[in-house]
Length: 277
Image 1 (spheres, helix red, strand yellow):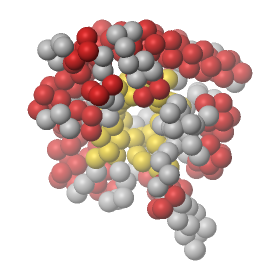
Image 2 (tube, rainbow, N blue to C red):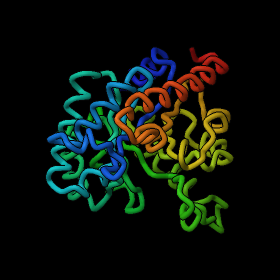
Image 3 (cartoon, one colour):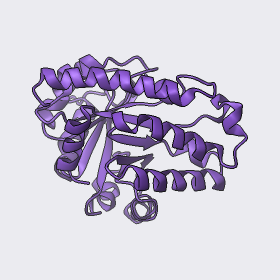
Image 4 (cartoon, rainbow, N blue to C red):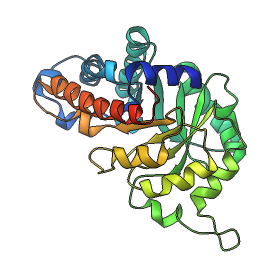
């Protein structure tokens, strides 16, 4: 999927919402747990209830591989379902892979060729040769971790280089932006640190940013848009638990739809303020 296609979808849906498909079996209603494949049935209902407000879905792979082979089968069926029913949606494998080149090449084959994802999250700390196999897949996206939303991000990502004065996450942005282009490389930037988005945009003004941390982690959508939006939006803002587990009864899909609609409505207003729609 091209950057132009993502942008068209943002304009058409008046939304830059990414819904994280991170299903927690302990929060499923009994009616779903009784089905043959609870994770797949849950995901289908979430997708059917939220797709009109959503430009991307992002399954976190840990929630599937923790269930063994059955979890991988649920993931594969979920991707196939979205591809068939809503082919315009951007699909992100939140896998946080990254290893020596030969291993990364196999990860790329797994998630791009076998599972059919449009993008994968990748850790950059082993350098360019560990990222290159993902970038070399034509028509696919690599989403590099830059500034994450968790508290522990400060332990490493905010280390300042004595010579350049750059934080480590800024050096990652500078260096990695030369590895790819705004047409195949995105960066993760956490919504819990919106004050850093201006610095990020100084370095990568044209790249899409995947923004976790809005919802249960407390990130501000308006602050992210103020500091991080470019003239083509350039944001995919993720919300997971706050949408998919907004309700834990058999009406969970109704509640998820309402939550997604509420976020999309706020996003539409922000896009209009910037004359993007």
